[in-house]
Length: 293
Image (tube, rainbow, N blue to C red; front, side):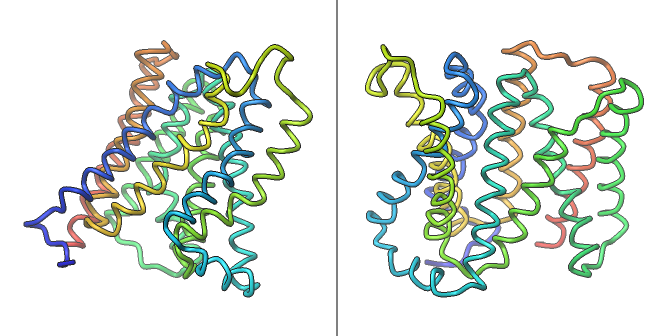
């Protein structure tokens, strides 16, 4: 495969990336359809069925040989277990946020990821931070501060989602583990967590997972893992700078669903806060693009 340049974009890779973004952006629509089952039941099934799906993916990719070295290395296995727990927390927070009408706040968390990444890189990895990057961080933090000071809100859910995503990405970036194999191993602890929830909070006697809409419960694992696989495939075919920019279309989709479809509160102060965060994000993406060029 020829290296990706600014003059050529792999069409298939771009399609994979866009499909991943569309699925991520539609998460609120999907999980809203499962709200009647209750948070604990939905969370349990999402965690339970992830491992069987990834098992089939590994069989299809014939990537089992990538799993064995991780099991033999504590240096690799312990971080994977840590990222698995992070995923467990993220899944719980996301589903709960959708059910409690905090979709807009969830989207804010993902917009904050660049600011958190810059700050973490400076604190823990001695990365040099330029004035432009500090400006991006300052604007994003100012947006959050506006919500706290002007409205008295505590956007802990969005901030926690952004922080956990940043930590997860930082750990996985530094692990030399095959993406599919790593994702499978992350689903192993989730399987047992999900099994406990499903046993403790079973469906009513007249409901079957083979009927509609109950089928949405096991399919939720497929629906949430599939975009990750598509994103990984896309990352191997198109420039990461382009893919990283496209990623922010996903929380944008979440944002518009929250405001336009589910009529979540969005006051003038929210407008100011999000403009500051978006402006900070725009500066960050511009600075990253300048690095590439």
